[in-house]
Amino acid sequence: MESSFAAEPIFHIGSFPFTNTLVDTLLVDLLLVGLMYVVSKNIKTIPGLLQNLVEMIVETFYSVTESIAEERTPKIFPYFMGFFLFILLINWSGLIPGVGTIGFFEEHHGEKVLVPLIRSATSDINMTLALALISAVATHTLSIKTTGIKDYLSRYFSFNPINLFIGILEIVSEITKVISLSFRLFGNVFAGEVVLLTVSSIFAFFFPLPFMFLEIIVGLVQALVFSMLTMAFMAILTTPHHAGKH
Image (cartoon, rainbow, N blue to C red):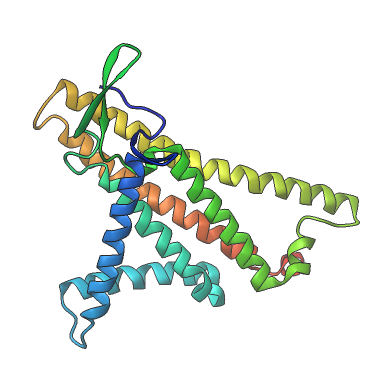
């Protein structure tokens, strides 16, 4: 058994490869949509356990966003919460028994290699890079809508040579943010997948359990880091540029 950097195709639709990480993404999407439907259809004046849990999580995250983004919270909070829930469930999906271990064998370079039917999507660099790009595009789009195109461009372009140089550094910074967000998430999840695969192939039953608990914490922390950084970037870029000069 080996762990591959690239997602493995399960089948092809024409020339489009349907990969095991895409299966995981679609299943998590269905779970999130199903959870939202159940909660929205069962909202009561006297909340039950599920409604109480959802309200507590939403209120906590909304308060955190409000403490940083202030009046821009209604615009930023949906992105913050959306990224957190999606990444958290995908990270934890890799810990479900059978995910990453049930599949079929293919011959690669003369050796039989297991191709899992489902694999955690965040262990695929394509997924984490896509999430980072979505985060960046959403952040800059929100910045333009909130502050206006003139104020947005003034962050990066100026007739003043010093401000222009700072603007160029800001552009480089935005590119490194995408790289940092994608590789941080990918590296932690992929490393955890390799550790669990190695430990499980050597020891059975109870020995891998501490590693699984550790990965539950890592999955939670990485979801928080990605979503909170996105929220912080949005809060910064939706602040009028001239406001930072006072």
